[in-house]
Length: 149
Image (cartoon, rainbow, N blue to C red; front, top):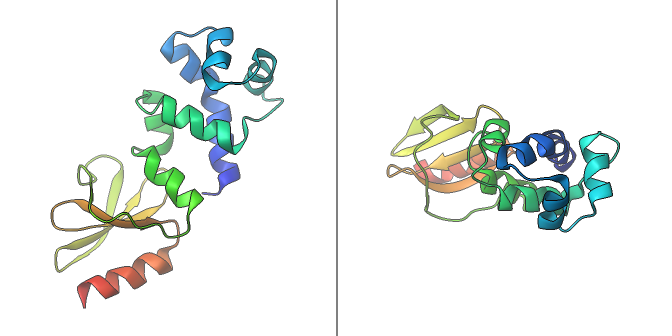
């Protein structure tokens, strides 16, 4: 997934998110810090929210079922993966990937998983704590090898 693909997905879901939360266009525009005119244009697929506002939508409405179904769980991880190449935040806890993840490889207490929607990868330790994540499989394989040697 690229930033552009991420933004497009948020653009496509903004009206559903607004409806899910029960907000008018005026209120949603106020919450996001954009004009109502801009929001209307995005909802009509004539404009885009852009990177910053797409992130704001995901942070403000991170509990949205629409976003969860669109991105497959932890949106923070996707945003960080798109913002920083091969980001590592050691030992961030997870639920172990029971819903949105496929196990790719397990060895010596470490597991590579791939998100079924966004397709990004992560490595978990034996306590389901996130070691690292990335969209780059080569990086994940290199880190997995380092961890299991």
